[in-house]
Structures are given as C-alpha cells and as structure tokens.
Image (cartoon, rainbow, N blue to C red; front, side, top):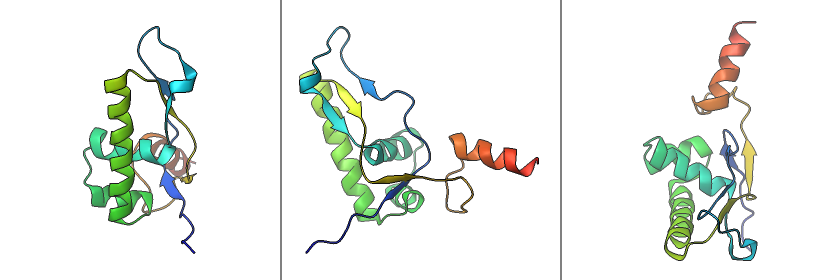
Length: 119
C-alpha cells in the first residue's frame, strides 16, 4: 500500500492557466501541468530558488520537489517541441494563508501580511 500524497503548499494560483501556439487550439492534444508543478517552475526558474528552498516553501522533501520539477520541465518541453497547448490545473495542493513563518514572502501572501499589520 502506498503512502497518501501530501498536499503541496502554493502561494497563488497562476494568473494565466493556458498557453499554446498562436492560432492553434486543439483541446484534445493539451498537456496538463498541475498547480504544484507550476509552483516549482515559478520558485526555481523564475525566483531562482534552489530545490531545497523550493521544497521547504512547499512543505515537501527535496527529492519530492525535484521529481515535481522534473515532471514540469518535461511537460514544457513536450509543448515546445510538439507545438501542443499547455493547461495548468489540478494536483494535490493547498493555498497558503500568508500567516505562516514558512510561507513565501511574495505575491499575495506578502500583500496580506502588510494589510494585516496596518489594521
């Protein structure tokens, strides 16, 4: 019997959840990237975090973050090479509430903390 999947902590859902070649909208060929896979791409590639920092922020082991990141990069490469649509949806995740010390200091969470402290 396998262990249950632990929900991965993400700070915000993606603003845009579908990408693809201009003028090409074949829904059946879409590649689905999960929200937690998107979060690893954001944290490691966009924010420049290490895999360990990403794992700490998401509340998972480094090896888990590495596996999620690897799966996400594979899906991006399929979309680029094969000209397929990428949709970001689903997965095992929880949206952080911004009050945790281990929460990220970016995007929505940071704005919530500032708003709470001014009250």
